[in-house]
Image (cartoon, rainbow, N blue to C red; front, side):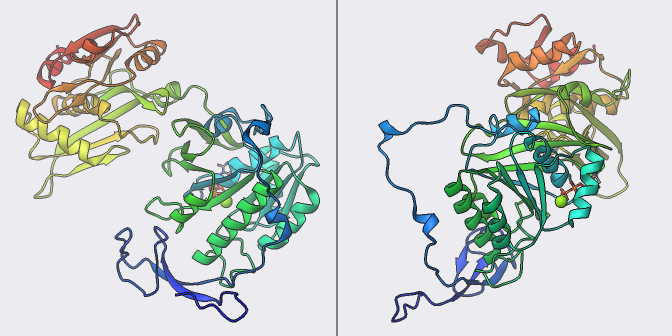
Length: 458
Ligand code: TYD
Ligand code: MG
């Protein structure tokens, strides 16, 4: 579909692209043939091809043997929870996208990181959304300062990069990718053509200068990095800041990382003076637990490679609608449906006329089947109006016939539970066939849900 002129240069091309997955077509489609999303196609004009600037063509082949890597080249952001998610700091020349819902705290966290990185080298913070005065007010609230943190309120990416080239900072921040525009893609800021052009320009800039770039991006309501899943392919690292709106806890999660594991999470708490790293998440998540809580169970879940204790709560109440409801907050609703169905059919718990609400306290999201047993215990505890032993934790996946299936990383989970003073853990029998964890916590095993219930409510 490209039309080559006599000069050999491509003319501007108009096509359509899906805002969800980036799938491109020549004609508008009501439903994306790439990802199935409805009404997601927008017209965009691919910029006319330009001659490559000299700086972009500078790379030359090097023999692998002659290549020397600077061992400790990563730039620490001075925030341990942030550095860990990155895999130990920012790699020179990498482009890191930080996504999250508006208002979740992206600008706050990144400004804090910029502030502490500025202790070592100049940092250029390009603020395309807020004025320099607004950034200053925020910095004051966060107690940040210093002559090396430079703020540029600018929406033109080209102008920002010209400034950056003069300053040669140790870190460039762009807040946000939706608010900047590049002259090469002649449409409005935030369009697909603009996002793609800006991300491409920033990648080339970062790679040729060897300077890391932190790029902030807003997220659409369904959780994709805005419009732009396509951005995920362009950048080196995708981090996602998430949390429930009314909870002060925030999780920083790696979705993609070319330089490290995607298993690590950082836990933060939004305070009056910015984001504070939570070194002991388990303690924080179960801190407000009642003494004899009905409908509450503590479960050691894995967040990446880290065990975290979370409190699952359930409430059963007579339904007011013809079809009883199953509501899951922070949990997979399919798991809740499965667990309640197994309780009804295999154990005869009469849940058919009851609404069941289950939630994870503290705004964490638990999607592990290992939390099934805990969920079942919480539902039964609420139904029987009887609290479980307070020093008990539970682990195990529930199968459709009510059998309990083993869980991974058992030892780490048990050690975390032990560290926080729990004394007993209810486990699937099959788990101990495969592993013998070293722990002084008492392990009580059950082959199926029925037996587990009998032990827990003994
Ligand atoms: P912000 O970083 O602007 O979010 P984003 O960039 O993701 O849109 O954070 C906005 C919210 O954070 C706002 O509701 C105020 C709150 N906040 C605090 O609670 N404490 C603070 O120290 C700061 C700076 C903001
Ligand atoms: Mg912001």
